[in-house]
Length: 572
Image (tube, one colour):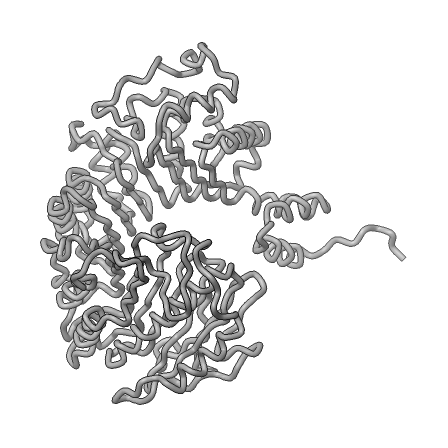
């Protein structure tokens, strides 16, 4: 008998680490796995370091970030495992406190996504002084490596922003290295001012670019050089997200994308909230017209205070290419006029026609309003926010709000339009202004989910094509108040879905959009869909794991059916 230790196959080790990586305490578990043997060490470390997320505004996190950077510099092999890095700070001055730490960016040779946010909040010098005192930096702080002296006053004295020229030379060099990594596929930037035009040009070689608010570029630089023309001839950008950026920056990107107008496939827009909405919309339309001729996905975040703010944008020329439309809407208790879906209705009218390519319509709904932390609500009240009279408002009990959804159903049910429409997705997006969790009391238990499903199945509205059935995934394990909010959204979304019974879509998918690990999806079928599948693990048409993940089996008239069962599992 051989006394040599048995080595587990790589497949088994990979399976063990895969499940360990899905646990709530995944980091600590993976650390323990890395100490089992050499066979576990490298695979476990690759998962530990694959995604790094730091908000270094907090003193404790900044110290941990410095420790991590020191580790990456000592053991450069670990840097090869980092696939995604997020660094955020409410106070931009914090980035100048320990410049050598950013030298660790040079070890990230396989980085695929980089997020760098400079003070989008209420950053102030107080945070800088607190971190400085904790780290032991004194009067010699301005003499750190590569620092050119005290940061000059910003043009508008906004402490939450920083200009690229005010960065230390070493930080500029390290960030430039990351920006130009051949492995980089996605980049998110925010809070930087006067970013050099050369960087903006180089970003077009990425697959996904996200530009957040308060980001500006130095557009005064000369253009048309041989280097810039070479970059423009090699544009690879397919996804672009613009969140409250200026019209000048949008126009600059549009002129660059004009060199390859059929390359951009997805565009997400969130316009300026208060001032400059028209300028943003005009610039966005210029971008769509010049640089987005082959758009397949379009996203728009509507604001109830400015209905039809996208008016300059006309998607009619793109209705034969756009396959997915995503619109974010917000219900606010202090507005009496129900005009939340105005943008969505207008956009759909633009896309209506026999040649419409729309396959998926996603509606992301959030609810905003003041709340009282000292009150509770019964099962008849809805945790959406309080109105001026102090009672909770419920859009499903207001005929005027429901009329908007009826009009939406009318648009989507046109016989000569939206023939390729496959599904409608309703997603709840939690709002920071919803009632606090401490203010709510549970009125149902998790066992009510099956009762709720059966009740809806028996009371569903009959349409011309047949009776609708409701497929409900298991309720996730949450706090009582969170469960109540989930159940409220189930009720609300089910009623809203019933308003869309005549559309050409084959199903409505409803999502409680908190996070990938906890959200659940369920489907409303009509008579054109296959019958509901047998129960799996005691839940009709659904399958879930202990970690909150699961699958919903979705039938779609053969379009997405597999060849065997007629059902396609959709990972949540």
